[in-house]
Image 1 (cartoon, rainbow, N blue to C red):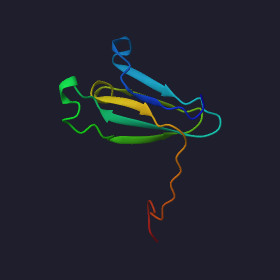
Image 2 (image 1 turned 120 degrees about the vertical axis):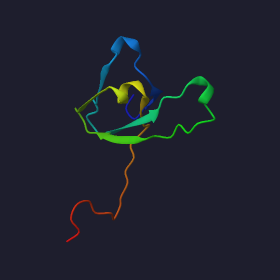
Image 3 (image 1 turned 45 degrees about the horizontal axis):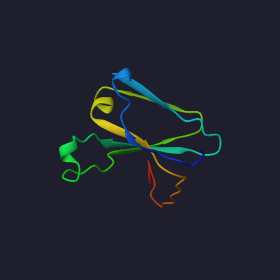
Image 4 (image 1 turned 30 degrees about the horizontal axis):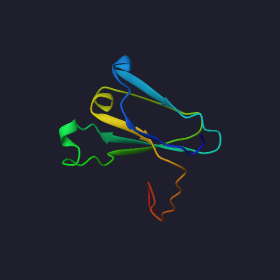
Length: 93
């Protein structure tokens, strides 16, 4: 369903060691998060906060492998989030 997210997960051994995410949304961008992969005994004892957030615009692709595949889960955020900031990137001239 549009706007429905995907919980943090790994893609399993069938896709080792490279996988990709395709955005098929035609209406808006989606937000892809990477979170540390936790062992079952670490859940609730170790921080599982996101370490990377990436915007996938409609009809885009991100491919990840190596450490990104082996050490992190990935998820898609529910709904659309819009953030307005006064921060400038690049030159402040």
